[in-house]
View 1: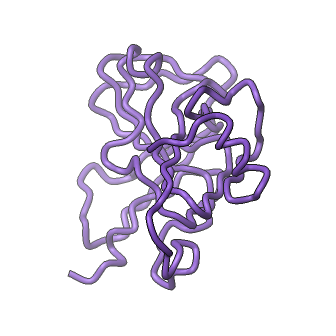
View 2 (view 1 turned 90 degrees about the horizontal axis):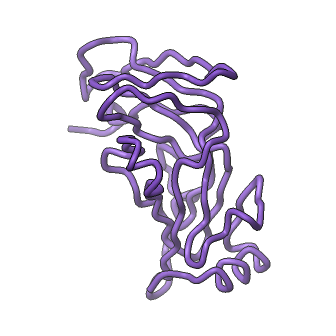
Length: 178
C-alpha cells in the first residue's frame, strides 16, 4: 500500500514525515516531488575499489546548467532534507526525468524507517543532457510498515548514511567487513 496525498499530509502533521523545504504544489496524489540540489560530485579515480575509501570531488551546478555526459557517473543530492520515522520511503525518478534519458539511482531507491538527511542521487544518462539546480528530479513514495521496528536506521550504530548533508555522499562500502 502506498500513502495518498491526504495520508502524507497527515503524517507531516504528526511529524512522522518531514520535508524541508516543503511546498504543497510538489505533493502529488501519492508522491512528493524532490528537486536537484546545487552540488554534484565525481569520483577522483577512474577505477573504484570496493575495499578502499574512494574519494570524490564536488562542484556546483552553474546558473546556465551543467551538461551530464554518457559513460560518466555523477553523484547528486536532493534539495530537500527528509525524515521518515514510521514509513519506508522510496525514491523514484520522475517520468519527465527518465524521458530525458536520466537515471537518478543505480540501486539505492529504498530508504529505511528512520532515515534522516538529503538523498544522494546516483546519476547517469543515455546522451548529453543539461541539468539545473532546483529542477524536479524525482519523487518520494511512502509505504507503511507492518509490525514494530526494533531499531530505526538513525539509531543504528553502523548506519553509514544517516544525517546525510546537502552534498552528495560517496560509497561507504569500505566500512563493511568482507
